[in-house]
Length: 241
Image (cartoon, rainbow, N blue to C red):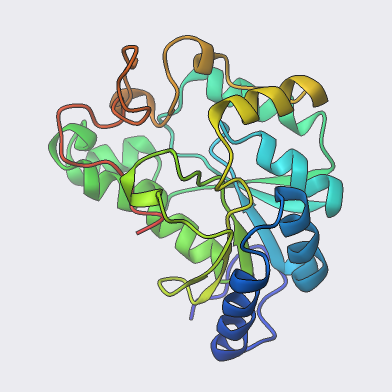
């Protein structure tokens, strides 16, 4: 396995990590987000990383940083973000005690255009997601034993049964989803109470925010993720499959 640029590395075997995940999944099934994060912080320390898109999940690194100051927050710098998303990244860095790490693809946009042709996201969005999101985060995660995501059950049918703690077979590590039971209103309430910067697009018709070329506004009553890859059967970038 390729060593990641960041993270302390893994000291436990996949079998040990899986046993930890399965036990916690049972024991913490009804726990609060704060309880789940406290457990994850105590169990993994800085072997725990937060994945954050700087969309609706800025609450997540705020919560984790309160329990684990200096935690690594992995931000996928795809090269296609909205300006509002980049502004949110910069604002969040000023108010939480965390190390925000830009996870970069192997090629910048110009390099990808040269190799695959311009606007790959239109012709083969799954390949574009793999090159700019999936491959970079997969390499980075090898340096950690557990990762924290902002998955919420109300996002879509694929996430409806997400556990608070799960075994991530694809990455051979523990996956922590402390906000799985939260609603969008819960996120907004927390952000307001704790003055957490939020992406301005969330209040401008974008309840789910990805790369700018592949995200549109959502009409009232539509599925929150219907604005992602609109018109295609694709609903996930591949990070959580």
